[in-house]
Length: 601
Image (cartoon, rainbow, N blue to C red; front, side):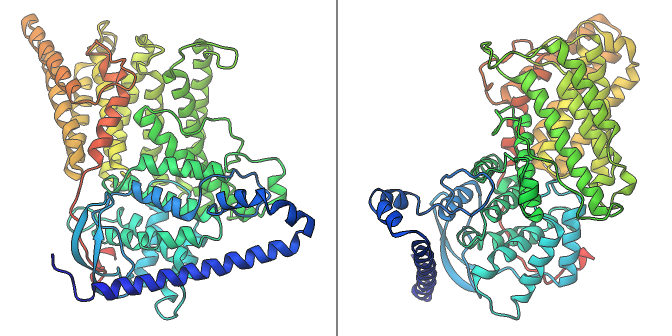
């Protein structure tokens, strides 16, 4: 194996840098210990010198911050967090910190050796392009999580561009540079590129951010900064699922949030805690909660943390009432309320109530259904005025709000373990909600407002299969109350939209092919008058359903239905897992620069 000439010198320079950082940390630890010893009485120090040494040694790697808020001690040290995060990130080469073009030896995240490659530190885009990307990050179709505010991002940009002329240590700038590159990476996923695909600079910005992730965790002034970094990585992975496991990253974020006590807020916190810090804690908690609910509801998995927390919604008092920022805060709060409602629906309809007890009573479905129906309708009626939103914001799209509302209706009314055979009213609601959801996703795709591709493919696929379920239902109520042409139009609209989505994401091809086969057999059955031809179309439809079932992962609780028709609506978690696996495809890594940014103008 050929070894580059500067291989040894590169290792020596990196070793020297690590030694310097280690000495700096030891000096800080010694100074902190000295100050603590001066503040403690001699008797107290003597009492804790024996058994206390064991406690101190066992907790010496835990990074905690002084705070009046409740906090749980756990394994949250910077090194441990870095291992957890990097194990959830899937890249061909682990980024190596470099200051110029040099040849380095790297290994993959799975420990496999990778050939020596030339690494080039990602250059920064022009400042005007950077400001444009920040606007895209906050206003366009990125996953809608209030992880960072505009003030912090602007500060990060100022520091990042100042490092080009001023020499500052990594400890002082690592977090700001990390934030800037992550915002660039996420925003570039939302910007149209002349090639028709994703801007290749996005991946390079992501790698540049990962190069500073270890420094962010080690030198973080607050564990809130560490949580924010994890959520930004998760936000990128949500848009580019091939680059890691969103499930693992979200789990890590939940546990760190619990370590920090973000899930609990006392009545006195709003009076004794800095409003800026309190607002940041709320934003990070609700971002973590929203990610967990989105994944668990889609994949049919248990929640990372149960509902019932008393964390207040985001405050909009820091922005003028007529500003876009004020409306954006209201929109984020409205999304949080919908996540809480959907969480309740999943708990009632999809939890495994094996036994009953006084502590865990089984919900009364007949009393609960009218209540949740009314609250969902109230939520829809109180959607923030889209005319007050920024024109480029996803919150200015009525199709977006309609889509997530009708998706919630499908979650509530389609067949589920509690009500496997819905009545005629529920079938009609499923049909209408499915058709409207298909139309809304078609509009979102036309307007290029699709954020998490695999999630929206799942939504439209489930909407289409639910429409098919209502059409094929034995009682024929939907067919009697709806014209044949309307049914065929809804089916064809879903098939064409799935086909268009598959051109942008290869993981949707399986859904497209399966639905086209099912829809073709359904259309033939609808327009056929001859009984023999109808039976033949039904046979073809059932065969396509059987083929589709063979492609799905095994059922989570070994409760797969033997009714092929019911599979269209009951096996939602298996469809979600199928698409989640398809989303994590591999791509070739490209290394490009920002020399040509004209397409951003």
